Amino acid sequence: MSNISRIKRICDANGISGFEDEVLTAIREEAPNLGTFTEDSMRNLYLAFANNKGGRPVIQLDAHTDEVGFMVKCIRDDGMLEFIPIGGWVNSNIPAHRVRVRNMDGHYVQGLVGSKPPHYMSEAERNAAPEITSMIIDIGSFSYAESVNTYKIGVAAPVVPEATCSYNEQSGLLWGKAFDCRLGCTSILDTLEALQKEELSVDLIAGFASQEEVGCRGAIITSRTIDADLAICFEGVPADDTFLPAYQRQTAVGKGPMLRHIDSKTIINPRFQRFALDVAKQCNIPVQEAVRSGGSTNASQIHIAQRGIPTIVIGIPVRYAHTHWGISSLSDVENAVKLGVAIIKALDAETIAGF
Image (cartoon, rainbow, N blue to C red; front, side, top):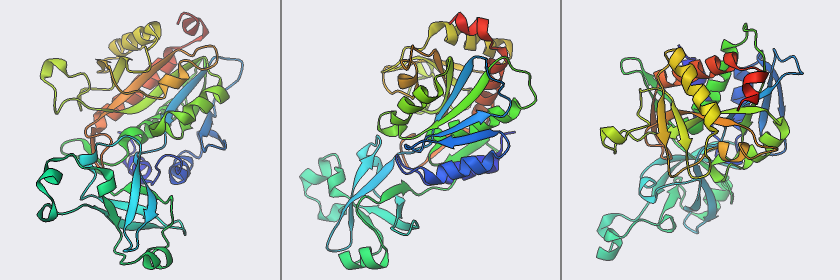
């Protein structure tokens, strides 16, 4: 079984795009013996596997450390915080949820996203889609001075959705925030742990990339830095089983990791994809195949980096992605790890050259 405490710790860490420090600390402390860590100026975290020998093909294991959230834009005279979104949100999902606002001392202050009650709305306001400009974050302050001097909130303070990861043994489901893509981060660590005693024909470097939710920016740098021959992206991907008819579902929770063929910015290398699907079949690992017209992952940057890097995406389905809460199946996490391990064990220089 996957390390539940690791999942909880890394998912609970606060880390919107550009402010992923807590996440990096958690990853480092969860993997003290897996290899050598380094960082760059964007706070991308690299982990060179301890069993690397050099002179072999290099596989990049990718996941991103950031989560969607908000940032304080300004502080009103009445102490309320105006904010902007960081990453993709549906506005109607934002109000009436608790958040954590980081103050100037680095501590997180409890807040609530407030909006005008329906009692005070005009008919036009009630019928209109909510705008973020009509919302505020209430931290319990009653003045600008109190927000700044007592709560120590400043402009550009990062704001994280309030949620705490839990695991239901009966259903096998995880509940929490930031499963996109902290479950990818934990999957990389689990994969490396499972490979510690294996004789491989490749070297492994993990790139825990920053700022994916605002344009896959960290992966631009990690792909250049690692300069891999092949890449596997572990990602928390939006599940489709709560709103599509059964025949259209390709990313259902509990049905195995999703291997996408295409999305809005990537056509997956068909030869590497076929190899991954064949490995899954040979090892009896359940997988789902998906054709996506929208969305993208770090694969969008990695597959066109350097001379072109064959890349696949192993997606862990997440219900209600890009909201305060997500639901995922532990079995999908475990099968994503099994698939990653099986693929890596089957790779060698000749096989990679065929992609």
